Length: 438
Image 1 (cartoon, helix red, strand yellow):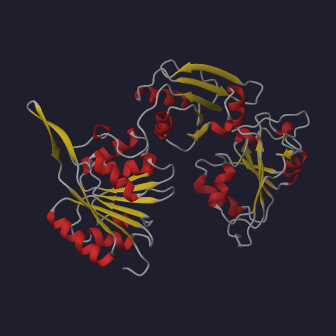
Image 2 (image 1 turned 90 degrees about the vertical axis):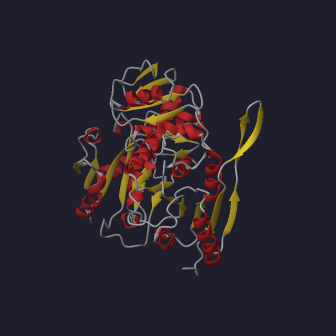
Image 3 (image 1 turned 120 degrees about the horizontal axis):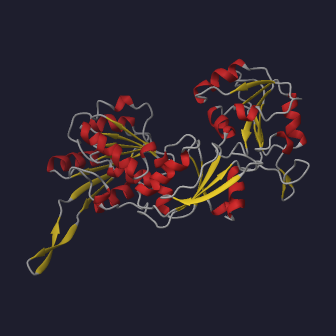
């Protein structure tokens, strides 16, 4: 992200709020000396470099012992900055602990592009080092600059980053049918987006590329998914305007949305099952007996930050689950493991919610899953056979919860007449794990 100041003296004022002064101060009394015992200053730069920084931000850079950033950012520093300049290694994230551990006791400045707390290094440091003392000096984000060029309202424009995400993560925004921005990873990102749009039946989607925003060589090109606009820089923001909506994110996708071999929780039952699971932001779901992965995938589509793990014994089905997840835009939030319960131990984090759609009568499938479920977590089990229903009744007696019988019948032609043809009824048990129940 790159920033652009709005006056000649290098200070941006918005409603009398000076954005070259720190707008985020994250401090803690907890000792974090294993990482660093000094405050870290994160300074947002524009594409024009230091010439548009305020006096306070410039003073921070002049006072620093070490400045961290990309080579592009470090090369924007003026000659009077005497601090040691260290480029980030690649990959950066695994090296952060080592880097800040080595710099303990030094005055550290970190360079960012635009607003460090908007898909930037400031957010990364805050998440990775919650006890680190961080002061942030923001600049204008590339999203704000892009919206200014396009005439779009910032508060009504979705912004997504492909810097650390796969292009399939844009499936849901494309299906929503509303204009949005993408922060590009490199000069190949626009073509990846165009190819995804074409694969989703949107070759006529408008695509605009804003290159080097805020710099002297800023460029703006317009095209479509089928006729991509010109890319002239690795620093780009892509504006996408889908021409139609796709599937809704509410549960109950048609069965045809999934590749399957018949092992699939059907649409109507699936919608009721997802409603019972009640997916929430940031939660982790275990889908045991994944089949086609339809329940886990629909739960993920209902949130932006939920995660899921599917346990499926069959290798072909495991591949099919991943294929369905990619198609429906949630593969980056879904993991697939082998058979339950043997592979429970492969997942370190305990789940917030569990769905068992198959294998209930197998030894350990329920008991081991229930032991892993967080206190206050939710479990939903669907059963069709008499043996499974009997087990659900026993679970109800021991753990409480609610038993529900779900029946669906569809209109079916009989000659010149019509009748309802029922599917096998499903018995569903829904329970919340209480603190005193083991």
